[in-house]
Length: 163
Ligand SMILES: [Cu+2]
Image 1: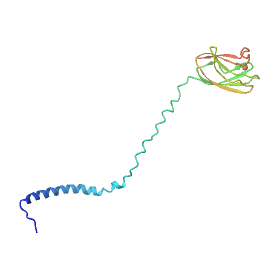
Image 2: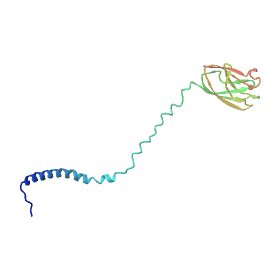
Image 3: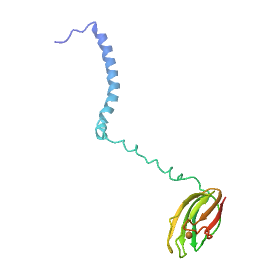
Image 4: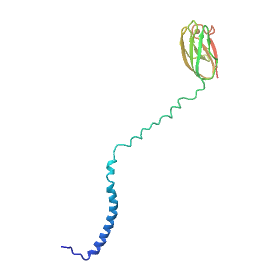
C-alpha cells in the first residue's frame, strides 16, 4: 500500500531538495576523502622526529683557550763552573720554561729570584743533566742564581731585566 500523501507533500519535496543538495555537497567531499583515506595508514610511523635535538653546538669554545700571552716561551740556559750562559738577560714579560743544562763539572741548579725572594727554581742537577722550570716573569728585576754551596758568591748569578 502506498502512503497517503497530501499536505506533507510540499514539505517532503523541499526536504528532499535540501537533502539532495546537501548530499551532493557531501558526496563531492566524501568521495575525495574515501579516495585518500588509505594514505593515513601508510605514512604514519609513530616514532620519528627525535633526530634534531642533538645538534653539536661545540666549536665556539676552542678558540678562546687562553688570554693572549705577551711573550714568554722557552729559555735555554747552560750552567758552567761557575756561571750561566743564556741568550739574553733582557726578557719580555710572560711565562717562560727555563731549560737548564749543566755543562759544568759540578752540580748546579737555577733559582729565579725577584726582590730577594725566590720565585721558583729547578732541581739540583749533576754534570750533563738537565732540568726545567716554568715561571711567570712579570716586569721587574730578577736574578738567576745557583743555590748550591757557595756558587752564588763565586759568581753564579746573573741579573735579568723583564719588561
Ligand atoms: Cu752551582
